[in-house]
Length: 210
Image (cartoon, rainbow, N blue to C red):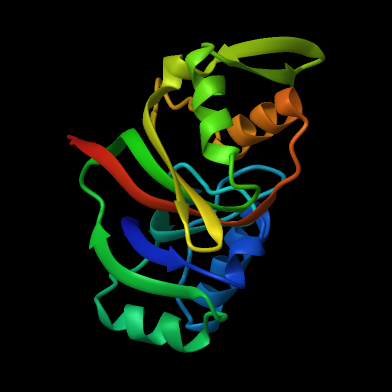
């Protein structure tokens, strides 16, 4: 009997700095520690069937992330408390459900906390009016992405000692732009010094497909 479950969890400091591969290994070890039998792939290099939905980049925090895992037994909500007792600081399982559908992410909200000069937001607004592009290298080729092809909206405000930028980002066929790439492109154009204090993925909107 193989069942697939979807786990919802939050990620905060200091666990924001765990890489995607290490996060997969971390949950694999946690399941093994609880005696939960995972379903493995077949072939010469079998690995557990754990799939993260739009995995986060290193350094980013989120109130809700998701992964799906195949197990050879039935799980209930008691596993939530058991996992939370052994997970490192910053990680917390929120809920679990048996997977009977597929998740398609439509859009996401990010909030960036930045240390920068007073005129940061004014310059950023000027930058965004110029229909900016982000330069990326993929498979040895240089490609440019139009920011407004993926960005639905943004807000830049001065808040006490930090600059706060909220990005509403569209996901197109699983592809999207990262807020830190927008900020980097902006700072390079204006030769600005800045420090990213924290980036949070605040909300993920998705559709359930049967």
